[in-house]
Length: 106
Image (cartoon, rainbow, N blue to C red; front, side, top):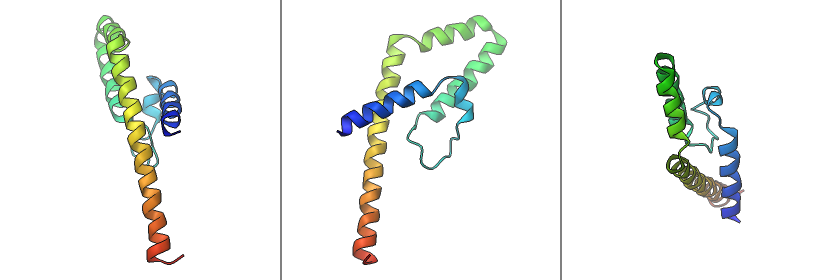
């Protein structure tokens, strides 16, 4: 169940994050599962800067980012960080539950 949930979340994050949208997302949102928003924002900034100076090099960067090695690596990172995020959320829920039941006695 956790694997299928992680896969669905990873697919949603992958499909919902496009290059122009990176700037519209808040890096410091507390409940974000997308830990790759910071590297994506850096990559978008580098691409925009390089593309202004040389559109050919900008196109090369776009082509390089779409190579199978980069795509597979990015998908792996998304999948693994999503798993870690889900585990961290579950741990926080357990700690909160213990706090309320054992310490506060609710």
